Image 1: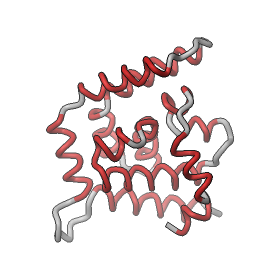
Image 2: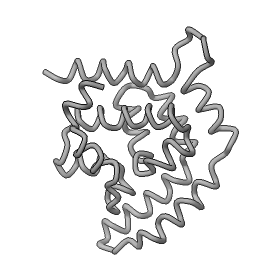
Image 3: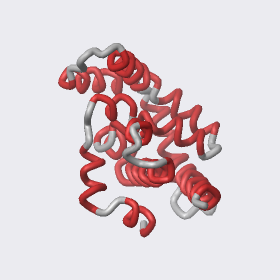
Image 4: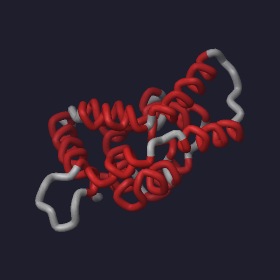
Length: 171
């Protein structure tokens, strides 16, 4: 948490979490990385902490989709960057309908079209309804693990991979 606080003091963190421009909503926080607003290490810290914290504190439905839907676009690229290909594939399959919507909006933005954000939120809700509930539950179980188990969880694997990435790339 200390690293996060140093990179994102409270006013900045709150502002980033609430950022819902069409570019961020459809492209995730990597849109900010691409615009030079945050660097790659900041993107890794921000997305890892919000992905793991969101799912750990509210699951996929409330913690991720309910509080940070713009973060969904960052899941697969983040997990791939961290070398967690299998987890990236699982997230990609699980969130397929959401990714399709985000891809469509990104294409509209590339063509210079204006995005109707009210319609986007309605379309996002419809896409979320297409997620397979059993797959969501299995991901949440794998992410959090069984209480009292010493087996590594998906959450711990993501956190460990992020720390390793930061250490090897912060020089």
